[in-house]
Length: 209
Image (cartoon, rainbow, N blue to C red; front, side, top):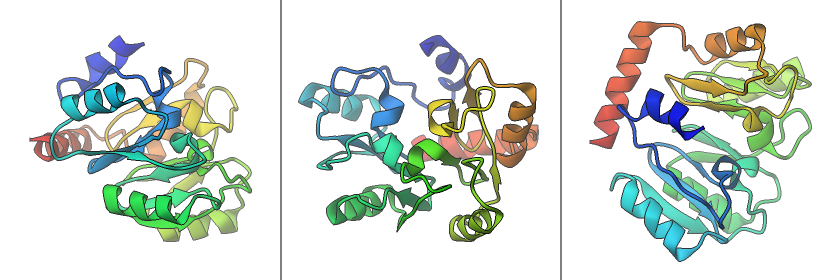
């Protein structure tokens, strides 16, 4: 599992082996962008120090006190905007805005409060729960300032956050994902252009220097 990410990403950005509260499903418990990463209060001091030691100095690592501790399920963000579960604490909302440097909006997606589970978006585009209405997609797209599409992953799964990892130049999807679903992912996240890939890789290398 790790080797797939390392072979594709390690030349461009750090690939860190980590656990959160002793668990390996770090994508569901953390959330971040190029400015910082937020981890739940169940993160041990050793785990927190490991992240601080292995990530670049310009990436802030912050432990956060929040009752809804699966941060990857309750927050979706890019480098400019974050959507959060309507019931997150006000202090959590403030920390998200400060550490990640984003505008924060309390939101549901397709009637689902777990915005991190049911939508994924980057600085290029995004995908939302398949039952999201056209009106809601247009509203969200205006809010996020990126194009959005309703879709699925892993042969019809609406839990997008559980089956896809994506940034501005690369995406990883579950093994059950169909060719049609992959085509939609490549299109909405603008992953088809080699020139675009090279520019994003250059920007990322600059960000982490």
